[in-house]
Image 1: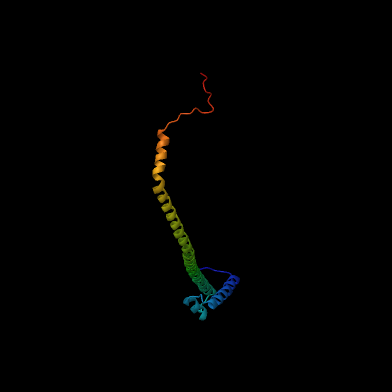
Image 2: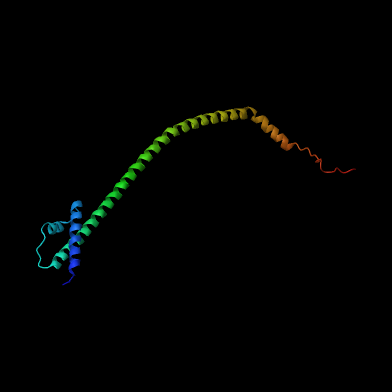
Length: 158
């Protein structure tokens, strides 16, 4: 059995009533503690009541810790939901933006491909018309050899 000085017992009893009353207001008190505070047991010694009050405070601390832990988990999950909603909203906005602005690019691509096809047809038609003369000129340039002495080289005097 633990013997405590009387002034300590009084301090513990005061802290017990303060703690229990504040926890009763926030509804963080377990049934056991509320039963103890509602109907205090009649103990023959002050030490027994102090032990009961200490047990009640200890129980209230665990209950408060569980409550805080639950609140933190709830806040975390709610924040994650908000983040997911915001992300989905922004992704949807991006998709709408890209579809609106991509349609202009598609039109520009179609116009560019039309221009390219027209230029290719022009080049092919010119190639068909002038192709034979170009080949003749190339063959003549390769087969007709006309040796020339470069201007930089001194010509031998004979």
